Image (cartoon, rainbow, N blue to C red; front, side, top):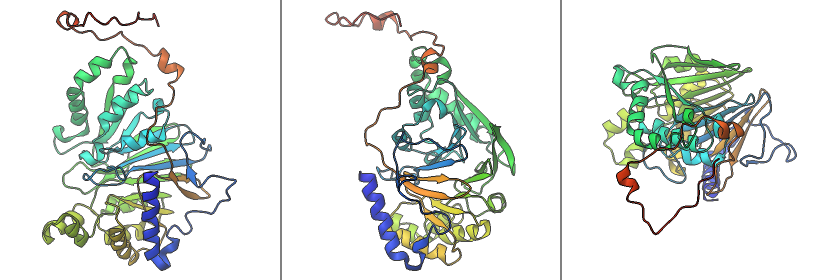
Amino acid sequence: MYRTLRAIGLLCAVLAFMSDDADFVKDAVAEQSPTETPSAWYPRTEKLRPNEMFVVALGTGMPTPITRGQKSSAWYVELGNGDIFMFDVGSGSMENLFALRPEFHRVDKVFASHLHTDHVGDAAALWVGGWLSGRYTPLHIYGPSGSKPELGTAAFVEGLKKAYAWDIAGRSGILPDAGGQLIAHEFDFKQDGGVVYEKNGVKITSFPAVHVLDGSVSYRLDWKGLSFVFGGDSAPNKWFIERAKGADFVIHELFYTPEGLAKTLGWEARQATFVSSYIHTPPSGFGKIMAEVKPRLAVGYHTIRQPELDMMMIEEVRKVYDGPLVIANDLMAWSITKDQIKQREVVSSERVQAPPTTQAYKEAKRSGEAKYSEFINNGKWKGYTPPPLPEK
């Protein structure tokens, strides 16, 4: 309820100041009668249509602060063929993923734009949490190389394995063996339109981005004539404009103005300008990009949602772009077909359980419980006797 009220309040504040821009999703979101679909999306109450794409913003914020209202970057994409893809898994975002109560055996693919914590900080939470919640196959992490091997996705994944070795060893055998595996799929960050995933009619390509170091990318997903483009952090770049042109649903960071960043964080003008405009994309840059790309819906994110900052950003964007626009907030959701893009909000409980596991999860191979030393075993308190262990 807190998320809902906060989101409604922010939206009302934005719309109150937008005047002529009140139709900011014009031509993108078609009106529907209450009998067709509800105005909110409730977890596990709807099935996707065969030709439908469903997108949820799990995290739209910054590295800090991470609050109940905004987590770091993460986007959930589900297709009518049953596939689920995660684009970034930033810090705190798994709270919102669990709020969706997805079938976790299908949440097994992550596409990382780059290796900042606000884009991959919850990788371990998905790895272990998804395993506990029903995934019985490995978690696959796709991501770019770096300028050196130790700065690439493969090294990141190996580092996670080392950091969580005790955790994984202790759960292995009790949980399905394969679900504890983490597999890296590293590709050359320089590739422009190179295919990084192609299966079940889904093609995902990557292209370079301009952010801090070599090794940042953006992605495009194509399926059944629908297209989803996800840009991680980047200054405006030629690759994004070329690869995103004419796509249905285009996400790109919409960062603070230099003035907004200086005011919010108390930075000097040079630092604020460098960060907002040389390694990120400020509102004027976002607007120019979307004016070139001409998507069915332009989606901005990666800022702290405050009405005064929203106004500052919208004013700058609207100087150069007058097309369909949304500034995303956590747990906004979109149903996308060739005929319409319908925006809704996820309404979920603050406390949830993962859905029941599948029969395949229950039957998946397990190598047996982990064991501790005789020293630890001898430390058990004689005053407590556990119940007998069932055979299954």
